Length: 257
Image (cartoon, rainbow, N blue to C red; front, top):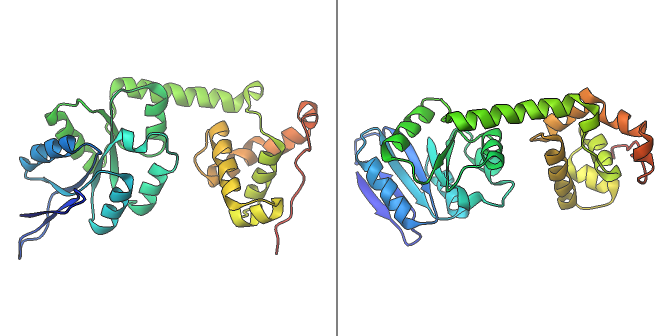
């Protein structure tokens, strides 16, 4: 194998002429070179795992996903800290690739959210080399890597969510603007159409949707529409005196033709 490095610390393995690429293709996305070098040396000892690229930023990772077909991305959790769209963007760019996130410390909220968004494995930065290799092989085979503690957290989170969805007293409070946007979503309107109808920008609509997703515990507009239709959210708020007193109630909106 011929190994090539460039000035941006991205790397790719190019198969020798006449030899087809084989094995589990891995991209290492980590801001710290020492971790990338260490993991690369570990994987170099395995015949069925090969590193096709390295990236030190999310931007570099997205570029690598376009250039190098990959099966697994081992991602430093800090690279996506504080971001909302990083994982959905990853899935959009590489829907067939599977994501492993390395974290310094595991906690309930972050772990549950990562698995909910489609991450296939959450592992500590201090994971033993043999376990990391086993993790990659399991995930490449279509499994999810999750320890007993994380399983308990995920199950408890879904139980809590189920309780929230079925208990009217625990229903999240939505503003009139959020309900107006939800009304548009349930009629299949796009962000551009909703923005025009309400008199704002697409970015503002996106910001509102993120808040609504968080409040209702859904991940996209389809889940949002199904949730609201199933639980009759709009109808309940229109009939709620406490909500009517908070401001302008949601008005039926018409999509622009």
